[in-house]
Image (cartoon, rainbow over all chains, first blue to last red; front, side, top):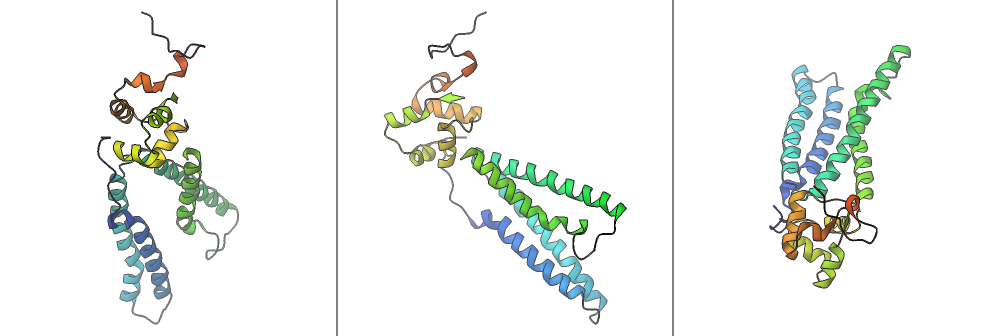
Length: 135
Length: 77
């Protein structure tokens, strides 16, 4: 409860950041490999699925890291950051989906397929708002 | 919710970091409670009261039941 001193940070606490970077790297790398049509189809498929595997590891790491948060204010801040990020991404997907019914959005530019890449940005904005509120 | 945490801590000459360590929370949490930006959970509030050897209502002041002279009003049956 409240009588134990805060535990020191461990490498497990850094999994969300390390995993996020690994995910971005494998996605960029995978996308580059997928685009090379001269490569075997199997290799391109493996490159396309590699970020999914990293993603699964990242999700497990994030959940474990959240469970290890023993400071209740930090839990509140993280929750509010996610509560900001998720609806923002949802609203953007919904808005772009409706917009695509009217106009054709360029697939390599502003497409609902790329909203996921904005999620970390929304999360950081939510984190900043929550931290400013409580500190 | 108002509280007397800063006063109680100052009486014992504890820093925010020291109090945070005793309670097992971050210094940021102590600062936010003292400035009234964050209301602690019931377990943490009890932990704070226990640490100072006081009742929880001696540390945290219920604004809704506080009388104009600053004292707390007992609920009437």
